[in-house]
Image (cartoon, rainbow over all chains, first blue to last red; front, side):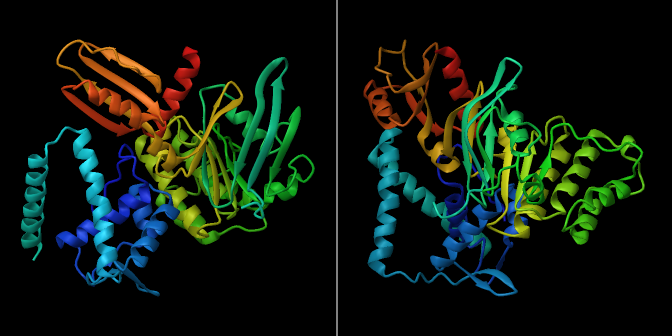
Length: 132
Length: 301
C-alpha cells in the first residue's frame, strides 16, 4: 500500500497510518470497496507493533473510512463521513490552523501559503485523474 | 490501571558483582500487552536486571515480580509464563535442531507444533542439522522458535539481534510481531533490551533508559518523539547570542546552530525565530537520538 512511517515527524505512529490511508482514499489510489491489508502482514511489513496498526484500523473504522467484514477483512468505504458538516468543518479547521502555525515558523508568507494550497490541490486532482 | 497486575514490576532493585554495583535502585513497571524497551550502554545493568527476573541472579535487595509472582520463590510458575532469548545463545552441540526443540518442548506445558513447523520453514532450517554446525544467525533463529512455541504471556529479549546480518534481523522482528504478538493480540508482553534501537523503534510502546544501574528516563514512545525536538537554525552571519536555557544540547558549526530540547522547545523556537535566521527547521528525535542525547548530557554534567 506504500505507507511510510516517519519517526522524526513527532506525530503518533497510529495517526500517521490513519492520515496516510485517508489521503490514499482522497487521491483515489484506494477506492471504495477495495481491501486493505490485514493487520498482521501490514504490521510485519512496516515492522510496527501489531497493536499500533490495530489502533489505526479501529480509528479508521470509527471515522467511517473503512469497514471490517467479519471473516473477510477490512475494506475502504465510500467516502461518506458519518459526522455532521459542522463537525467535519471544525476538524478541518484544526488541521488548517496547525498548517498556518507551521507556515509562520517556517517563514512562509501568506501569499506563498495560498499558492502552496492551490498547487497541492492541483497535484491531488491530477493524481485522481491518473487513478480514475 | 492499578487493578491490573503488571507483567513486570521491579522496585528499588540492587545487585552487585562483588563490590561493583551493577544495578542501583532500579524501578520498572511493564503493563501486560506492552512492548517495553530497556536501553543502556554496555554494562548499564540491562542483562543483570533481566537475569533477576529469571532468578538466574538473586537481587541484593529490592522487589522483583513477574505477573505478581516472586521469581526466587515461585521460579517454576514464573518460568511457565515467560520465554527468554539471551544475547549468547547456547544449545547442546550434539543435538540436532529437531532434538533440541523436542528437548525444550518437554519442559513446557504448551508447545504449538504448527508455529514450530511454520518458523522452521520460514527460516529455511534443516531439522536434522546438529546445533554445533549452526551459524550465529541460525542459533538465534532456533532460540526464537523455542521462545515462541510455548506461547507465553511474556517474552524477554536480551540484545536479540546484535551481531546478526540485516536479513536475519528483519525476519527476527517480523516474527516477534507476527508469530508472537498476533497470536494473542493485546495480551503478549515484550521486554527487549537492545543497542539497535532504530530497528525496534516501531515496536516499542514505552521505554526506560538505564545508565550506570539507575533508571534515568521512562517515557511513552509517541510522547517522547512528540516532546524531544531538534531545531536547526542557519544565520546569514555568525550566530547571535540567544538564550538557550531549555536546550539539552547545543552544537555550533559556522553559521549553523543545532539545539536539542525536551519540552520548552516552542519557547526556544520562538526566541530563535526572533533573531531572523536564514532558515529554521524543527524535527522530532528518534528513540535512538533521545537515548544518545540523554546519556551524553548526563556524561557532560
